[in-house]
Amino acid sequence: MITIPLINRTSDGTSAAEEEEALATIKLDDDQRRRRRLSEEVIIVMSDRKTRIRRRLSRSRRDGVADGGGAAMPHTGEDLMAVEPQLDSASGPHMPLIFRASRKDDDYARIRDESPVDQTLSWFARSRKNLKGDFSSICLLLFLYLLQGIPLGLIAAIPLILQDKHVSYKEQAVFSFAYWPFSMKLLWAPIVDSIYWKKLGRRKSWMVPCQYLIGIFMLVLSYQVPNILGSEQDHTPVNVFFLMSVFLPLNFLAATQDIAVDGWALTMLSRKNVGYASTCNAVGQTAGFFIGNVVFLTLESENFANKFIRSTPGKKGLVDLAGFVFFWGWVFIITTTLVLIFKKEVDHSQTPESKEENGEAGSGSEEDEMELGIFDTYLVLLKIFKLKPMFWMVVVLLTGKFAFAATDGINGLKLIEMGIPKDTLASLSVYLIPVQILLPWFIGKYTSGPRPLNVFLWAYPYRIFVTGVFAGLLFYTPSFRLDSGEYPFSLYALWVAAFCLYQIASYCMFVSMMAFNAQISDPKIGGTYMTLLNTLNNLGGNWPVTLVLSITDKLTWKNCIAKGTSAILHTCNTKEDADTCAAGGDVCEMHIDGYYLGVAICAAVGFLWYKLMFSKIKHFQKIPRKEWSVFKK
Image (cartoon, rainbow, N blue to C red; front, side, top):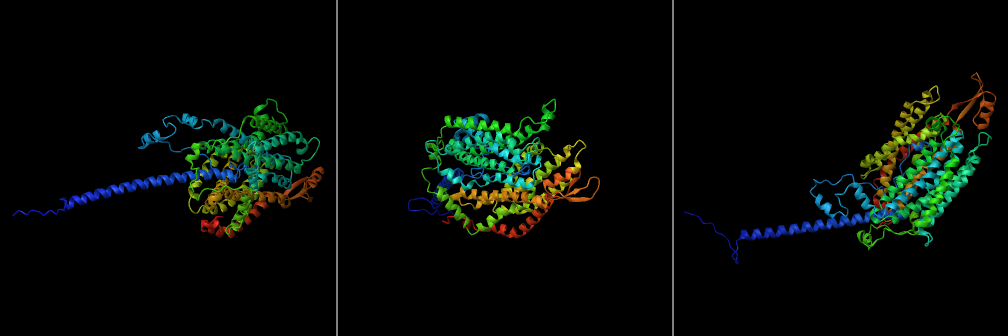
């Protein structure tokens, strides 16, 4: 018997199986449309988020006027080798693409066709096309930032020159006040950003007068150098207070010029190339600092000139401080005049295309950064200080670096005191450049998570330990000295290795703290918030160095030893007592070196600080982000 299966049919004659198949097809089409719509929404959201981030980065640099915008300026000779990078530029460094598009990629053809620049061109050709219209502006920015670095490099070179003239650490402390303006420019940055002469331009209203004054200061200084630095022939002493009185306003003018140029860079360049502003800052300022510090100290060195340049030895270097500042004073004046006449201040960032691309018509996003006026900015700063978690944050930023003050402020001066040429000491920083470039990349992997301060807590005791290594190496440095009075290459290699160890610790602390500051900063006032925290961080490094320098002489104990005996005649702690001892044919010997005592005191305070603040710093990372915000809604 043959069984015939029954087939259920609907009223329209279709089978149930056919109907189910049709419904499945419709459902599949709906799922595909839903996924396509979701994908389009994700692309729109990501594009909008990218736009908001780009706007926030540029505005934070304009409104907040980030502190420095480039590499941190070393405070002393030691800082030339153990400098913490100033990574607080709100716009961040302009980084090239690490991974290039490959022809083997599936989307290569689409990327090539959709890109505004032909991807088949060489890297050089694409760069030329990208920079079309902005190349001259980038060159101008590079030179303006280079000029800015010249006085900063000179200020960092002065302590090394003073140490060569055997000034006291107390006098070094007086000059250290000249470093402070760059760390405190947040106090007047809102004024620079808000008050200007419209006819001249918002940024040129401040940049032009500042650069003219810097040039005039340098020209006047060039004629007063013999009176300020003293003369061995006339037995005139160094006028350290007058020297500080000259370089303090010079640094103030350089800091103000930095604020103006930072703001001008955002409008001088087109929107697509505004990221190069921070590159110009970092490259130009570093180059200027190198010229004002390392190049100047090298050309000023009698040792270098006799060894590599002259056939007949002389008693001076190729240039002196007076000639160097005279030359750059005229460069400042001539450059400023040319900029005043030929460079108009035009906002190239606000083109119709860039407005449409960046959503300038108004996205209504809550994350857009607020436009703050001068009084609003100061009011917001006050509100930040009133936040509940901010009290202990301020304490940490202002006191955390005391543990390293003796090493940061005195180590380089002690090396010069032991006979290491100041130009050689300054040139050692060149060997640390690869470390300075690679370290932030490596550390960034560990500070990008929710608890970046764990790296800070790990690095803090390690950095204290390295200060002890510095003290030990410094103690044995004289034993390396050859009969000729010079030091072997092996000693310099040891010091470069020690400086690398120190840089690892200082970079870990700095980058981790900056990463945390970026996380807690209120997005609506990101530039102002970040710059305030960075200002506190910079001040936390300045005042301990000034304090330790001022007390080191009091911690030092010297005895006048009778010639040919071990009998102690009297103490010779002051310069007058030392001269009296030497005039009698006796020897003034170090009994207790205040540097080592200072390192020990700073380390002890540092370990105590670490024990007291460890739980506080850990707790910072557990505080909800809204508690750090000025505007809760």
